[in-house]
Amino acid sequence: MGADDAVAFLLCLQQPQLDILAVTAVHGNSHVDQVCVNVATCLRNMERDIPIYKGCSQGLLRPWAQGTWPGHGSDGLGDSKSLFRDNIASPQKEHAAMAIVNLVRANPNEVELLVIGPCTNVALALKLDPELPNLIKKIWVMGGTSEGKGNIVCASEFNFHCDPEAANIMFKAFEVDKSVEPKLTLYPWEQCCNHSLSWDFFDGLVGRKDKPATLAGFVLGEVAGAIERTTRILGKDSFYSEEQNAKFQFIACDSFAAAVMIDDSITKEIQTLHITVETAGNLTAGTTVIDWYERHSENRNCRLVLDLD
Ligand SMILES: [Ca+2]
Image 1 (tube, rainbow, N blue to C red):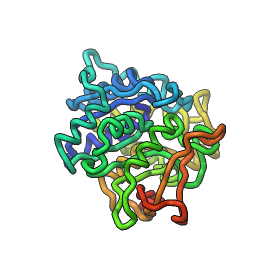
Image 2 (cartoon, rainbow, N blue to C red):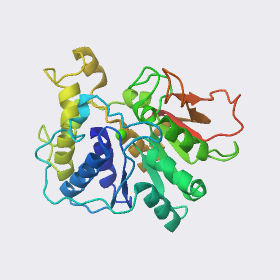
Image 3 (cartoon, protein in one colour):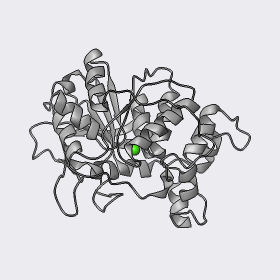
Image 4 (cartoon, protein in one colour):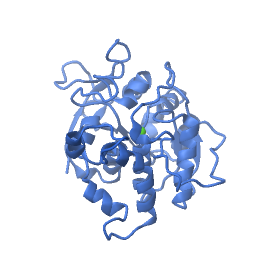
């Protein structure tokens, strides 16, 4: 869990219509053990109790590659001292991949997955139980690119680059006939940049400028603290130029995929097509390969979000 994962998680926790069965932790912006701590810390602060399952600490074939973007903070949770709590919840004994299998099996055609980190746990679950795509209701993924503008290497987005093999397995598993609507919706990196929120709006959410301070607003302000120091405030922590800061403002990538899951009607443009992920290549591991003209694929597997309201 990095800072934007935490924002997405807070958004989900604020939706009374969502019945959140579990949180499955995976390597990514933080080590998987730290991810479990971060999830438990968010839950404690939000006064919620949801089972946490610890998953994979590295990719299927690749070691853990921690991102270096400072917006997550060194702990992935904004380096907030105010969120620290004693006696936070420990993960369940079951592995995250087994938990996905068992929860989906126990609730056939009812479970939706929100995938906002590397796809390793999901790929492992799909290999443990190849029937899962028939039993999962929907799967919402933040990752990849729609225009080839990588954010970790030139051609690849972070989540897919961390575990290209897992992302490849996931897309393959959700292939369906062209007459059928795919269950998988992908929210790509470029659409995160295209729909950044203004810092004025953020100030309202976290209870500044005479807006009422809520519990969720307080937690949001803390988990997004390093994002704010990195991308808003010019100074020693600032990662970008003043011009870049002004252009992009508040981008909490994973929260867009969560928002689309919560209300699919906010999408303005979706293209249904076939996607796979490059697993080789010196420069392109994890690159999203899109069959834009449907010349190379017998089937489809993805609803690709290309614009939001
Ligand atoms: Ca993430």
